[in-house]
Image (cartoon, rainbow, N blue to C red):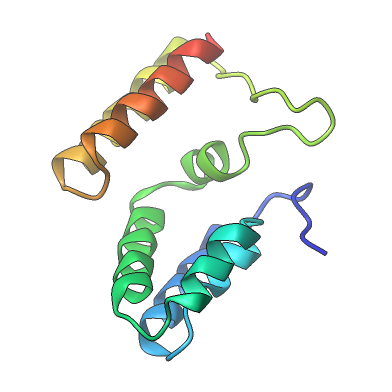
Length: 125
């Protein structure tokens, strides 16, 4: 039912995330991105402002990423092996960590999320 083998389109995810802000039901972008558990949580909490605010933050987060970063963040698990996709170069790794730091500095991700993702990037090397 949820196809995690094909890369997801960043523009579609942005539109769905912004739509979750405007419509009474939230979480469609989570289902599209292959995260049905989070999609269900967003749907169940749609009567509160929590998933709508979270969707707005995620839409901005998707907007601040280029397509490569989006694919690295949301399609990092290779479907056949289950292993993380390799980082192409040290320059790519450094740029990814800089972008992650910008998100942390802007308050879009927490210090914990930053550190967790940074370690995940470094473990790939």
